[in-house]
Length: 202
Image (cartoon, rainbow, N blue to C red; front, side, top):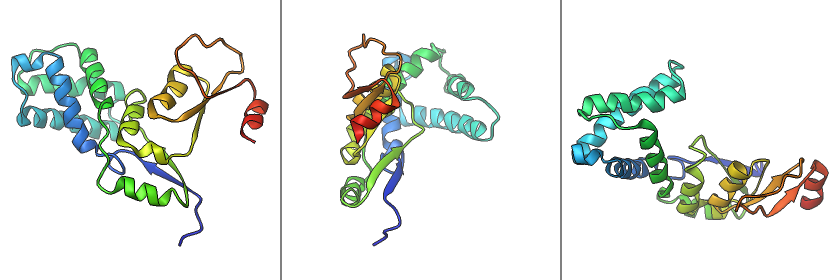
């Protein structure tokens, strides 16, 4: 038994969640809901063409040759060209893709059993660079968050607290300016100062 570590931080995609299975589902949803399927029916070849464009732009981004905004836009520009499609709104496509991927969350084989075993001895956490809008839903759908005994603490109701809610996690709203909560997003706790946070958690 390794007693050196108390906390384990897991990456999400392709460590716990099967992005390679979820992505085609989201892409097909986007493709069909956007009306592109009326130009050319969805097929494995259409998915391959998109993947080639997407991976090419991700490589450029990783080499610091483009911004993430350029990546998100130009992968579709190139895809329209190689697939012979009449372009549609890229913002519209991006919104559909995010909506589609948020409905997925396929755990990798054995991931939940591993987390169940490790959760008896360690505190488990997830780190992810996934989209902050879609990723909480995917994490919740996958079942991995039931093993995460953690509290999300943040100052934004629409981002931090809503993200925790979507992922099925408890939350504490840090609200030093004592703003009124006018959104249908109830935190489990609210604190106006660091002293309040200490008082709530100790």
